[in-house]
Image 1 (cartoon, rainbow, N blue to C red):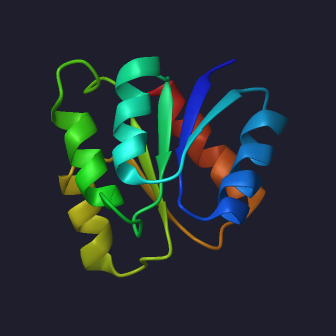
Image 2: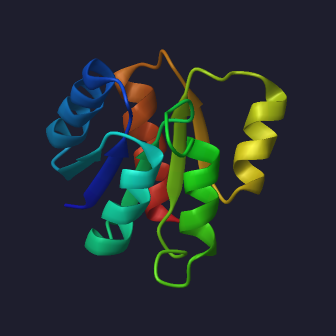
Image 3: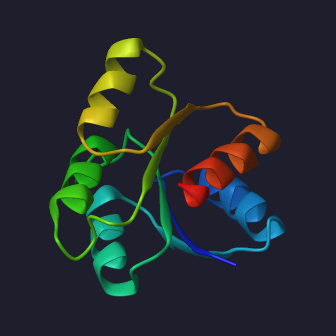
Length: 121
């Protein structure tokens, strides 16, 4: 069982992703924007972060960069989970330190597979 931090400003997305994570047998932590996500990540040191991109305060690209550059959290893999589906967004997200990128809407199976792939690496 892993501890997975879900960062999303949409309450419905947060609850939907949380349901999937818990159904897979993992513990879900949540944060409602990028800045809070970075803080929770530093405090809780989860095994994985599922990060939305379009959020207030600190967007997901900025938060991912902050997590991947901080010596305390740089070992924690981040999967960007977003509606931004352009190739340039994907490339930029990976350059910020994300380990994977999945676009909304996604199936429960797609998210579960992505979590499994990243956790095995």
